[in-house]
Image 1 (cartoon, one colour):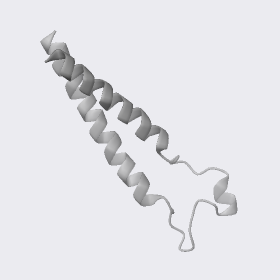
Image 2: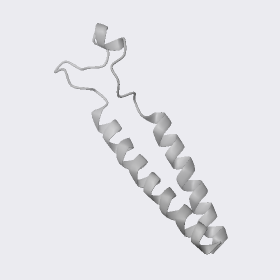
Image 3: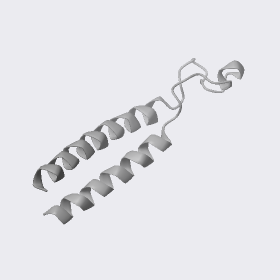
Length: 75
């Protein structure tokens, strides 16, 4: 049981690290001066990707917290 939970904990942590690294920065950088961050209508071109990655980060964070708490309670 502990081994399965440990493997799930490692998978959740790897998913969390990958999802955080793939996210676009939320701050306006120098690209906004030249208009590189927006499309024709002034909205961000990567909105749906960022929203999906936000949900993945939240889900992986909750799973990571729950699994670590369960493993701590078992040991």
